[in-house]
Image 1 (cartoon, rainbow, N blue to C red):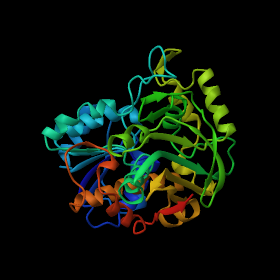
Image 2: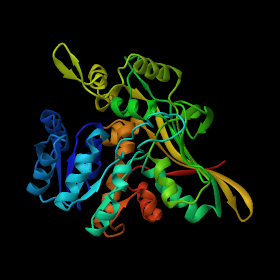
Image 3: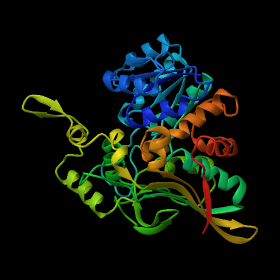
Length: 400
């Protein structure tokens, strides 16, 4: 497989690192606006021939198309903030390449009733183009990280193999990670974190469809394997948009363990307008307040040696089997120390990165295929889950 990797931040580096030992990965172009960053990753990989470095401007579709044609790639892997999704998605279509991302095109809140009704939903732009992708016999895989991604595979597995009827599917994410030397240091892209945490969260119900609620609503205490009790709250996330398209259930939610301090920081950023992703004029310079916040915080890709603890991502499913009530949690726990020892990448980015590499593996070997715009639930989950331990990220299942 020949891949154009757009974005060589923390997750992009982890994707390249996990893919490196795989002989089927013929070429992975490390393309980034920050060429020095891409070169650093290339040096760590120690294989400039299979991992060439290129400059790319992900905001310019022609830049993406030019590199895809230059390297004759089979797949364009989107590993940048989702503000660039439309350009990368459309570039893949134009050059006739497969496409994969880990977060779908951005939402826009309802103009008059944002905390009750959805406006433009996550992925709407992409799903509206599903028929033309299918007509062109091209495959776009959307939402293929850990959440969304692995969690959606678990939802499909639960439907196919564990339940006769599903009442609710809830993605639950929690961690006990600490970072030395920082009062506030997100372990993932702050740009994306602000976007998903401050937007109105979505809930899906069979009778109501999609509707929104207040950020950080419906707190609950969830018992995470190897971590313990963590309070989780509603957050906008792709699984709520993806799961109901392929899995029959009565309700879908996504809840994330943020912590009181993290929530207060996010609320303060919102009050001050520092969550704004649109550029404003500051003494003659056009700058996005959110980009300034990101620039002031440490790069999550470089926090691994200061990070301690574990992160757990998974899918809680409630329903019936053989007439009896059943409740399970399918999950994956990533230990930061182990991820650093094996991949030299911190746990959160490593856990996010293994799913797209397994998906590439399954596509390359003809196990997964198809055409159109498809989420993880559209595929047979067993081949993916069988490969998780092989890739160093085994799954677990807890009867609740």
